[in-house]
Length: 632
Ligand code: WTA
Image (cartoon, rainbow, N blue to C red; front, side, top):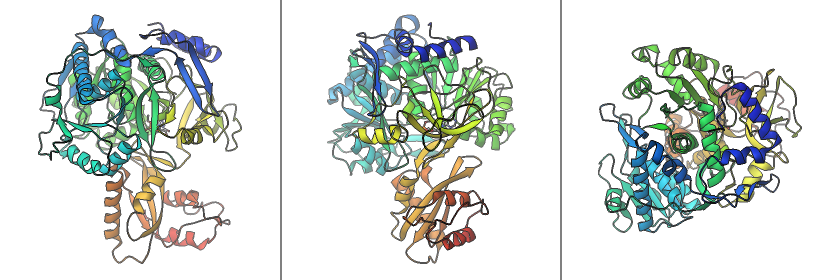
């Protein structure tokens, strides 16, 4: 395909074209996909009112591009290579032909149950091929999938189902995760006590554990799908019709449903996958994310399938049965491109090189990193011990809202530099601004990272609340999309992402809003108020530090800590559990009642003597007492 960039010169040329004539640039790329009807207008946009449309008037179905389009040329090639949690269980290979049939069957099953174009369907599944099959089945019939990561609690699941009024939930009896089994169906049952919009729950049999059955709602996947045809016409979708909703945490309030649309997302997912990873025919590609996160959406399912790749889907965890599992799987399937998160790299690095040594890893060509800043030590270890010094490392910066990779080296093309995401992809126009929104030009500078021009894969709205979307991303600085990240631009114009500058924390690559965690902690009957901040954590990137005020002096603080952790797990997920809980008698507040998180962050970081100006505090003595009780 001609949109494939082959060298640095071509990159610079493509970049320049994308800035000088974006409509022509993207029209050329979009033409490489199959459309049911051509678009009439490539782009219309307005960031201030926030209205962006790509390929208006065009019609397509993304599954025809992921499946049908490949059948003639690569029907017998493996599309999904599934590796189970248990290394003694056989892996499974699904060809493009088989995947096409499975998706059509599942699509017909959804139709039979009454699913229609535009309906929202919640997917709460383990990492089994049926999760991808369900996503594609939704897209086939024009239903909107909303995947909820299967580590979220019943409460979080119920909130997400209710927010977008999902008509169906597709789940499994359970999930295997390392040595544990998780009772997914039980969690769905509990969530359903708080919802009234769900017509059916379809249950895929996987762990074969015992589950409760509600005759009026529950349906077995294998029973429903048994008589479904392997032929299902793909519904023609407008380019700007919704493809999926994915909930993500912001700095305020509850998680919001980020909406992506069919045309632009498809073009962006395919283009970025092909170019960043430099995928070649017959490469085996493995992204270790979960389909419950955006990385799983774009770089396990849509991006690779759009490019006719073989994508590995892994059910397990990096440390089961031991910390050599990733490396064992790489050798077993001769993986060429491997994409994971810094938190996994750091935790495996901490387990010692003895887990890497038994494996040759000689199939590897390219290594990717995503989700959080990668520190120099982890980068070097990844490069030397896993890549044996010969693999390209692509440190890919992007967000749920951006749909796909934004700033990243192109593998084996862009010279890399540890901890730098390097250069923007064609079509991406980054800009650094100061707190007033004034552009910070030049080199060797730092600022808030914004994007000044639309790209096809960008967020279109947050489900049910467009104004919130506009306020969140487009009101901080006029005419700019604000990412929430701080960023440095180096002497050679390379970008390095420093981390969030808003009240979002990134724990092991999982995004959490401080307000979300505080709300959960405040549910404890004796908690009056709390404040949560992130602090540097050697494995997780950021840890969670909670300052908590209770209504009386606690006799047994450890007991209260246990109670708080259990409430947070119940309200959100185990991933949101604070690492440290300090009980305090007051919080540092300004005279207008605003908590000064800057001070709390410094204390959590252990920087007691460098708290900056505390003169505007209502009661500066609070700070002294917090410092005294600070947890190491
Ligand atoms: C962070 C994940 C540094 C960043 C795809 C961003 C990164 C947030 C990188 C989005 C990277 C992601 N280097 N930081 N390569 N990639 N981030 O929505 O703070 O789960 O804003 O999307 O992760 O997280 P999200």
